[in-house]
Length: 76
Image: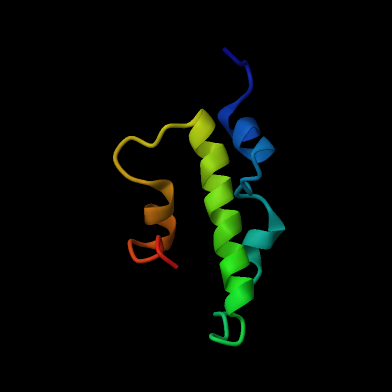
């Protein structure tokens, strides 16, 4: 068993922590369909991150991505 704190483990997997300045930057919606490929890349990155996290943290009742993205995202 690892002695690493959960936050350190998540950080190592690419999860941005609460104190990160990027979390305080404004976002904007994608301009679809013009930015469709960029949006797909972002979704691919989110699915990859969820897969990495799922290797060390089993989600009990629901999929991580359904919680984050909503139930309509799986077939993008």
